[in-house]
Length: 297
Ligand SMILES: Cc1ncc(COP(=O)(O)O)c(C=O)c1O
Image (cartoon, rainbow, N blue to C red):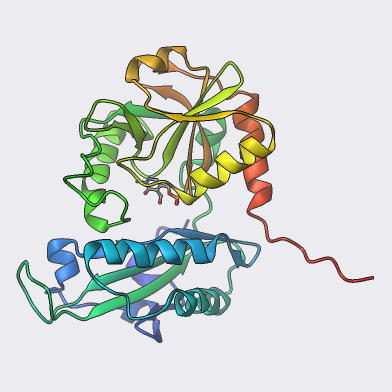
């Protein structure tokens, strides 16, 4: 990716119903979303000119906002249409799509009853979340100092900006030690996920993945579980203890940005980039491509 700052890319950002020149898509410094993290967002990917699971992502955006107690003033269908129109306007086939909704600057303080709800969508080219060569060899994960909180403490089903604070701290700490990312345990000490992707393990031909009861049940996670089952691979969703990592043979992450990313290391544990991981990577890469409609004979 070009080393141009993200506030200065080319093209347009869709902002509250209008296409604004990229560099002009600004908000006031006294925005509630900035001070109190009253913001929710989505990460979507376009492949071959079509956004994969577009409506599912934008439905989750609405649900995330509902959980934080605000209503996005555009319907899911309107957000879908705006994403599609912006993708065309940006002229990309393969790209990353980032809708974000946030409380504006009309009221300052914890209470935000009168704040306008804003919505913006940005689309840029983001070929690989992790270094492409490292991804094929398997990325290296540290074990994070912070854990995924108890769902009684945070709205864990919402893709809320505030929940990413511990992810950035954990990712920075991992990078400082030379790792690519970090695996987070949850509040009970069970394996949870990475800082921006869900986690899977393979043992004796079966896939094991933590039950998403205090972190995002990713759209990619559900897609990959479906693909694995379609290919006759058993997938077990359950509580996974960190000591079990010793016995797992393969590990991979899933997420819209990360897609299917093999993992070779988590702290002291080692994994091979094995057949099940490689096959699912290929099967997922094929599944995200737009379905070609066969012309009628
Ligand atoms: C913390 C976290 N977990 C999981 C995921 C995977 O979610 P999805 O597959 O819906 O992109 C993401 C990515 O959005 C994430 O940020």
